[in-house]
Amino acid sequence: MEVTSLKNLCKKLISLAIQRCRSSGDPCRLSVIIRRRIGADIIVNQISISDTGVGSSLKEFQDLKYTHNRLSAVEWDGMLSITTTSIGDAAIFHYDLNLKESSPSRRLTKLPSSSKKNAIFSGTEVSLSTAEDIEILCADITAYLKKMLILKICNIAIELVGEFGDQQGLRSENVAFSTELTLPSSDSPNLERLTSGLEEHVLKHGDGSEKCQSCFLDRDSVKVGCGRACVKENLNDTLVVEAVMMISESSKPSSPSCLKAFEPKTEILYYRDFSPCSIDQSTLKALRSIKWTNYGLSLKSITDDETAIVEWENFPANTHIDIALHCYNNQVVIPPLKQRPKVETKLMKEAIRLALDDLKERFSGALLSAHAVKINTYAPDLARSITGLILSSNDPNFQGECLRLLGMQMGNIEGESVEECIKQKILSAIDISDRRPPSLKHNEDIPFLFGVEHDDEPENMWHDYEGEEEGCTMIDF
Image (cartoon, rainbow, N blue to C red):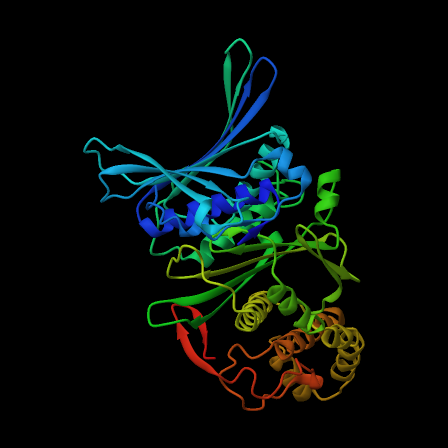
């Protein structure tokens, strides 16, 4: 794993701590402590990342590669101090690791160990010293942990503490971020927790502390769709990709933060192995390969800097799309397995498509294709013509049968009510016809009203499903 900056190294160290906590299976605490020490003529900043998960095997750190430049050499000397112990160890082990050392045999130095004094515990602490701006680093880690909060990871409590001292030895602490320990529930799988976390994120416009009352008066303001695709890696492990799509609508965004939240852009929240990370090329390829016009969306561009941003064309006003994607192995592996781009592209594309289809299936009129939207424009004229035909008839039996089919009764029937009823039935028929079949297991032809088209996939691309396991679409490669 290659890192190119100190802030990215800290994020990677936090991610590895999350994996050790997941591997333990027990309740854990992950602490990030940033200390500033001011001496007579120097300021020293110390960063400590500790967890109470399983002890480290050190391979995860030895696999780290730090690509540094002349500036980073001033900010950090490349040294990591590692302290670790496992439940069965009688001692606490200490190491120094120089990530700027090119020779593997000289990177790691074992230091004298210390006794646990018959105590039973496990955990790892990694610390370093740097001259980098502590406020910027603290803000960056806070933003990173807030994104992690969306996953609602069970069994792990997380805290970020800033500790500052001056020349007189006075110290102050600031808890910049903290979460409570959330115990797992058999009724709350990972995808459900991700969906709940993203919905809370959306209702708060991302960084807000409370739900925005001016935009979201009720939960019906947000439409949600989920998708989950998997492939067996081996007998004990499954590679899982989960996607959550949310469409939020507001009648009248008022404040500047509300207006910004409804811009026609979407930041892709991408997670790998229960940690936020930069989006990879396989996921970008999957996003570009989706036929968005089948869902009434037009993709203008995807930019990939530190975060991936999707910009939409001809987007409805006061509407916003949020997307969260998570790729992980059910079996915890430290360090994580290498990526398989072709496999992950296929899984990611299918998870996104399932989420779009789920949203479209659950919410009538949502994500209509461009073709269906065009056909919808003819519905009022068609309804008016049919209404005129019914009401102009002199045959009461014909009128009675037509109204019965519409669910109406003879009597004081007004032309407007008949016309509205017919229009809604036409729109409903278009909506039903526009949806893709809920299952891709069957390849028989299904008639579509007005001949709506769907993705032009190779005939054999999606035929290899083995079925579903724990709500997961299984794909056989």
